[in-house]
Every structure is written in structure tokens, then in C-alpha cells.
Image (cartoon, rainbow, N blue to C red; front, side, top):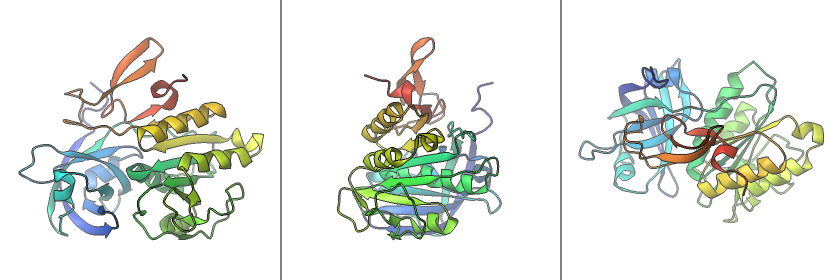
Length: 293
């Protein structure tokens, strides 16, 4: 049996909460107990946005509450499907398939987790932070870095958590992570107050450079975002000889491995192969997707 068979559920969920953010961004909390119970950071759901639209939309899971039976997704309106989803009302039914995909693999021997999220790649990093918060296998020391060129989907504020190796001017954080006791910092080229002025991978580079050799030896990088950002994260990991996992974002039709429309070229021990982002990923080792030039 293929690993993903029997692990993807079809649920008739209901919208529990709808938060509308700036720049046509939306956060939906959806009742989906089976998905919430089996989701892992990096996995996603395939949502039917409207009965008249035959194609579903893949959305990364941002949070999952197994006991309460809900998940949260963040999305930006970019077309007819997400526009329809953005009109969802509390109490409205939403059909979804999930959780789908291979998530991040945590490495307890590398407790300094550097989570890098760009744009709509932010949700898996929040889910990863949430999972680390409840994982007692290691004394995790996470840092979540987020980058966006549009307003963040939350009200940023100065962090109450000190990050010694971070640039002094970078003080803005995601309040939820601060409340969890997990340090976060924000980056943007849009000039937002308290944010690092530049790309999020540049912020990550400065943080890594400020660590001691011993501290860097404890770091593992986890990233999700646009291809250019992921390629930069892979180069950064290679420069410091760090392990790096990336969650890819691809257009998908079936999202269960049948159509192979989301296949990408991946380096394997046997040579180059085409792998499906939906079920073989979306998480891959960075060097297999973004090898050295």
C-alpha cells in the first residue's frame, strides 16, 4: 500500500471562525476532527471553495487542535476559488480532504530550529512552532522568522523575548508566538515599523553569522515560501553546512498523486527523478530540489 493511502480523510467541516486581515488575507478556523488529529507541520488540505467550482484549492495547515477538532488555514485572495472561500460565513459547511503530504521531520539532536516563512509560506512555520511547544523530546530553541511585502496577517508588536544574535533594529514579532514563549522576528522591504529591512533570508543570514560555531552546529533550517526564497534558504544552509528542509508550493489538480501535475525534479541517490509535491512532498531536503550550481 502506498504510504498516503488510508491517511487522507474527506470531511464535511464547518467554519468556526473567519478573521479578515489586510491585503485580502483570510484566516479560517474549520471543524475537521480527523484532519486535526492526523495533521503534521507541512501538511495541507484540499478545500472545495464553492459548489460551482470543480477544482479544489490546496492550503497549508497553520494550526491544528486535535482535542478540540479544528484546524486553521491562512490564504490570500488571488483568483475565483480563494475569492469564493473569502466569502465563507461562520457556520457554513466546507468540504475538505486532508491532511495531505509529508511534513517536516524534526531532528532532536539539532534543537536550534530556524523556521523561515515567506508570504503564504508563513502558516507551516506557525504550525511547526505550535508542535515544538508541546514536544518534550528535546529542549527546543526555536526562532521563527517571517517575511512579507504586504501587511502581515496579524498586528505586529515589539517582542518581549530577547534574541541576542538578531539585528537590534529587528524587534517586531507575531504576538501569538510571543505569548507561547517562542521568539519570532519579521522582515520586509516595505518599511514596516520594527521589521528587518530586507529579505527574510538576509535576516536569517545575519542571525546565523552572529552565532558561535558551537551554536550553529545545533541549527536545522525549515522553510516554506516562494521558490526564490527557498533557493536562498538552501544556499544559506549550504554555506553553513546545515541541514535544511523546504516545503514547496505548487499548483495542484487532484492533490492525491493521481494526476502528477505537481511533479518537480528531485535529485536522488539513483539520479534525477520526478516527484509529486502533493504526496511525495511537499517537504523535501533542500539540496535535492535546490542543488549547488
